Length: 177
Image 1 (cartoon, rainbow, N blue to C red):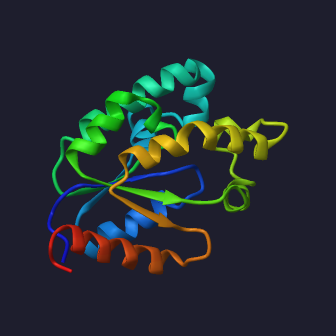
Image 2 (cartoon, rainbow, N blue to C red):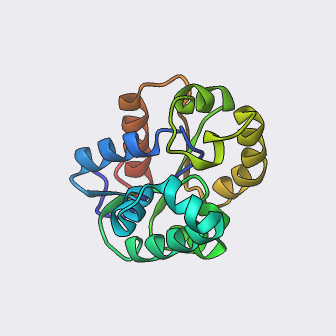
């Protein structure tokens, strides 16, 4: 069983961070947090409204603060927002305070998983969501890779398979595998 360390999930929108994070937390008996949900809880508004009112810069400032606070906890699983890695401070905190798991997903899967989701402000109003996702990937994928302790492909695997793969890798890192 993986020891009670923090597990932080990073990756693009539609990678399955929340779904997989909840299942890891359940299996390892850890508390689960989602940085976007935490921002919504604190502001009393959904992410798209925060983006509309404060712009991406205002949202990112809130996200950085939430990540700073949540990463100080012990024994949690945290699903981060896709753009959380844009902040060097957040990258440093994630790297220093837990095991970072990068859920790697191709653009096609992201499109399929996010096409009806109006809660994703960066693509909800986009004329060409694929182009937006490709541009985001060019900037963010190297940042995910930079801080990842574990990288897992999520494209053709069930969530259960991905969760078990991550737990096996966590056990290996913790010297239990």
